[in-house]
Length: 217
Image (cartoon, rainbow, N blue to C red; front, top):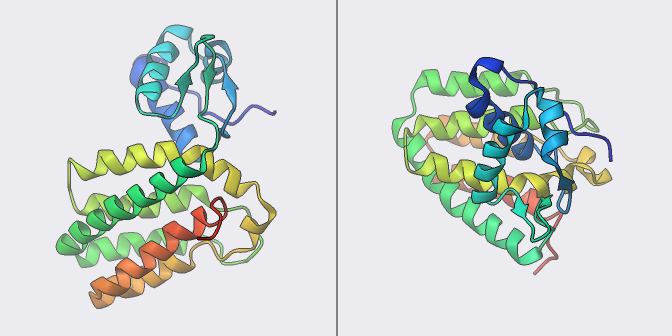
């Protein structure tokens, strides 16, 4: 397995930056379910000693992104259909709440910021999924709500979802979907202030990715 790309970090803020760099890598699907990692390899990719990486890994274990096995190996949790279903249900519930809060506080400037993110994405089919824009769009939207409770919960769910995202983006069919179609539908609903349509677009966006992993009911 080739080493996933992890951003090297500012040596003046080792502990926090090691954690945020690894969290970002997990969230955007750099690691697959069942991957076995070592502190030494992670430290080499980050360009730091193992001490800040060890502390970052402890946090990632507590947040469910990694498992510290009885043999002391670090492992990304293996794929489990029930867990994936739980993650989908949790994302649907929490992100719907975050969407409601965002709609209650949304301004014209907020809509413009979201439009600007989508304006930067390519519209040609058959490209590698644009994970950076996808993440930026969702969390720019959710931050509008200003909740200090909901946002960390949603971030933790995306952190656990990242390994499943790795499976999705490496399937041939993933490059054939119109990745941002539901984002554009959501923007249309937000401009109209249509809460039901906004929720429908968000639900379609979330469930579509899980449909690659879960058998139809």
